[in-house]
Image (tube, rainbow, N blue to C red; front, side, top):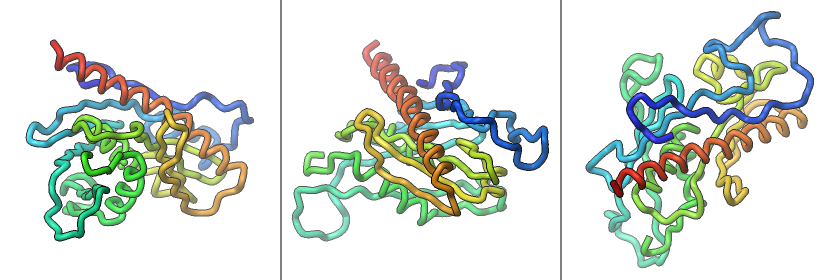
Length: 239
């Protein structure tokens, strides 16, 4: 939801599944470190206009994961290129020095940069006139919209970790350290189109089908929160 002072973050957990309850991972009473159920996402908070000097920007907060994305442009490329009626999307992802458990690990992340570009380029109309990673992708999509970049749809991204027989959505750092595999979906919910699917580890067919459905369901609900943020920002600008 939009960033009003004191406003409670909105939730976007997928609908409960009708499948039988799966066995816990570590012990009979195992629960997630932050107390959520396996299929419950963290509360999501969004705010646009986070950086005044940017053409568009957005702030996202999912639990302890906090992201700011700035968009500059569209503008003329600094690289000498032949004329083309198609624009180019340049992405850069960096961590602050206190963002990760590894002290001093504040630097550009080339893998995230490449994945962010791939997730977003199919949603932006790049003719001449003009998403830890899932949060970045979703926040970047909102920043692009805030900058007035023409887009086919907002892009929302959600991931699932496979921990033994359990699937946990929107995993935190501790859970990712123990995962047997991960699945991330980035999509344009209104157009029912997946812009990126990333799978690591070994997955059974039933698990990957369930994981994809969990992500798609959560993405649709997350996109509603993102649209609400934009609508509130637009209403506030008219006042």
